[in-house]
Length: 329
Image 1 (tube, helix red, strand yellow):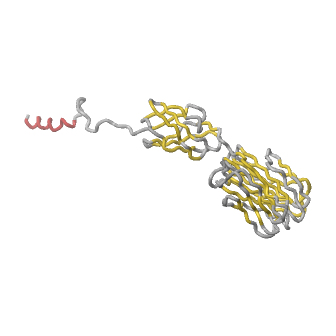
Image 2 (image 1 turned 180 degrees about the vertical axis):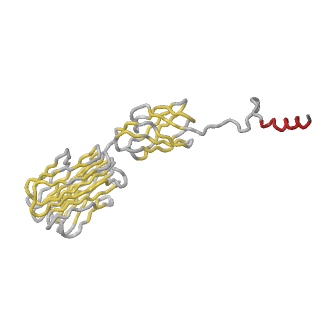
Image 3 (image 1 turned 120 degrees about the vertical axis):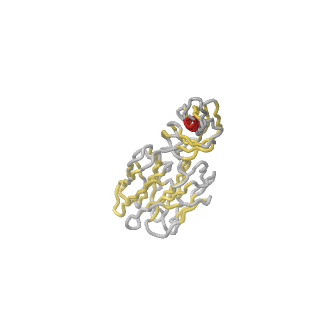
């Protein structure tokens, strides 16, 4: 009996009696932060007004727009209490439907529901020509480029001759794209770009070289990506002999990109038109014997990515080169 009672006492702690306290203690859920924007769009002035679940955040420290939208967002006017929250988030430049990834102080990062964003989009800020009346290129007039974050120079010149120097009055860095290479010394086209440039109310642009017969058109845009905005580029050179049309195509991969197309034309060329709803901000610069090649430039904001193949129609059958490139938001 003694031994049986001792065995019972030894076994008691292992019994799962209903009144026994748990040795593990209560299960504590980790902090959770999830939120929903009830309104259709969010911007620097329109708040994400909705609900959150889990631990109430006291701040949102950062936010990023997710694919297909992109870019960091500035957070202001944050409040959260009693299951509801509100904050403003600066709108990405691109349009579309996407999610906002927000990091709270808990710390935890959560994705919103899909939010429709109208976006500020890519827009032309300013344009100006270089047409010095000499064979050595020259400098543009003073141009107000305030608000621009991307600049492109569409250069037309002899396909042979000395190298050229591209610069501006605010000491930006200019990157050349691929130049066309027609036969003979006929018209060649080439883009130079300045990404995230310094801009101002009286900016000037220069492109010079000895005997290069250079003219150019400069376009300044807002809403272009601050780094590596180039998506695709292509050229089409039609040398001596000439034709009345010049078509060059690319297949863009990023929606809401700005597509820029230019044509350089030689002797006999005075003007060019373009299809596919492209916009020509500046008047064409005609060919001038022993002074300069001709040039025309145009742009188009392409909402859906894919093939784009605009055609330039020239006033006469002349030598020409077309250059095209697109730059994403």
